[in-house]
Image 1 (cartoon, rainbow, N blue to C red):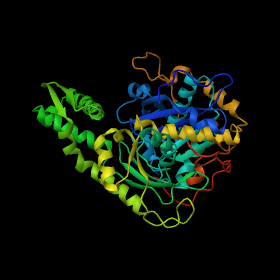
Image 2 (image 1 turned 45 degrees about the horizontal axis):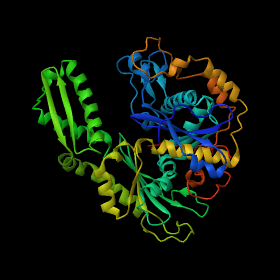
Image 3 (image 1 turned 180 degrees about the vertical axis):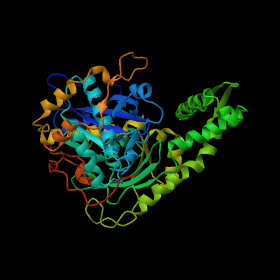
Image 4 (image 1 turned 135 degrees about the horizontal axis):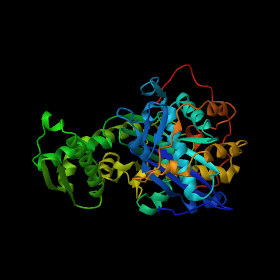
Length: 471
């Protein structure tokens, strides 16, 4: 999927897919030209930027590069997705911001920036979410998005969104002997991994017959830590409490950790990589060899493969395309999602464990967003653009904010602009909006290579249960 300078514009209808991760946020656009053309047109990435959010003591949420420049110590908001539904909100002094409001701000910002690139407002928006989220958590996010003028919104489990790319990837790889009916999806992110078994129904829609399995182990951050320790060892760096008291040392370690993450990505296609260690008392160049690094990473990645095997084993009887599947029947392929999927060792371990081909996108970090865009475009092709009676009001609210609020370039001297964490007008607006949630297999519009999708359900979100919490 190539980058896109401009899509949309006058007379062109397109849909957006947005995936907010711990480290990066991705938005993809898919033009709509009839049901049959959705898959052929393909999604294109229009935004890929670091996920940055900070809460100031005056209650404003800063996004993008302005978050890094404008936040005071202690207000940086990490693990935004993981805090959705948490009864304890993000705090900065007396200011509070619930996790779902911060996530909605990031989604709205990403969609607005993507629409700026595309030249017009998207006809539909699909947002990925963890498969382990329940209806209560999804309702929280849907309401927060509606309060920002984003309605209706497709909330799609990331595994189902990624599955929308499976047929295209299978055709490109040429390693899957027949049509895909069962797919094991492993999403390895910065803070953990999630494994889901998805199956294709008679109407060619993907659904998840069993809940996704989530674990905080085998995260991309764990791999970075292993590589950082290796680099420091090979560079002969030994740090004590006195060294860490120097502010330049922690700053140098953060830069070095980022370099380790970049080197890990480079080792996906190269046998070696070189990292420069730059600390106040040390400056060394360290050569990393992929085979040696993989020996260290294998025990770190092994738990993710174990979770994938458990997800496959959890498949209940009767979940096949004809409703008469056999419990424990294996998948036709494994689909790896997330930046860590670019590590060849992960594909090797998954293939060896399940004995099936492994599918990996050219950039696995954008797979979920691209698939979400395909689903949203398919929904528009089948049902027409979303009917938003107050879309103009939402546009007016956005137009009140300077366009450069969403500028993520470094070094801008413009004063920070922010999205309010608590907007009474937006709260009132949310009570007048109907938000469409897409849950489970009913979420998925027919994907590439399938027949025309069936019209999706357009029903309001179900009432939240008395209690519950997302991952």
